[in-house]
Length: 192
Image (cartoon, rainbow, N blue to C red):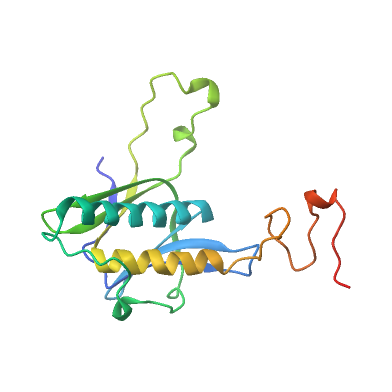
């Protein structure tokens, strides 16, 4: 059976955002066209990896195509989006595998997000074995122009930075109720 495709080509809005307080945030990718809204939950590391790869892909397109393709070096100011996620946030699925590519014909970044499945998890002792990932039941497919992709990267960076502050000694997150720093031999640092 063919998978259900939540496709946006291009969306009116495509952003990464969060719900909840720092330390307990849930991350989402969200796309909207008209009244159609799709939200996909994912991990913080997935947001970071996707934003980094989109930025690298656009830099590579700039290097290889020269002036043939107009790719902004930074996010255009008129595309900056600082609004919260749109309501209602109804999770379609939790993200697993993601793919990223450049469509030179339409000059668009193509992002595909597939649902997480236990069947796709490979144990360390199975790495050398042939593995066939099961066909997904649904896919979140977004095709965005280069400027929108740069704006997505910029917003994702702000979303990631808005979390808990980092400990200056060990780099671990500092919770509102304190932090057990491994560099201080497990002692809780207190403000004077």
